[in-house]
Image 1 (tube, rainbow, N blue to C red):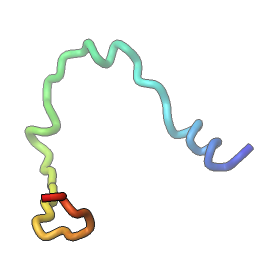
Image 2: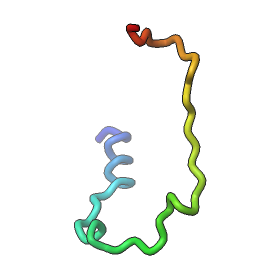
Image 3: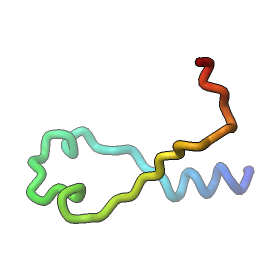
Length: 49
């Protein structure tokens, strides 16, 4: 068996349906910082205008 397939099978699992119905008591997006990058001078793709 391919090692990457074995690793994928051992480290990933299905999300149980009951997870979608459980109430959220502490939303992570309220307390954990997140970051984003906006490229204003990116020349990799021509926007077409």
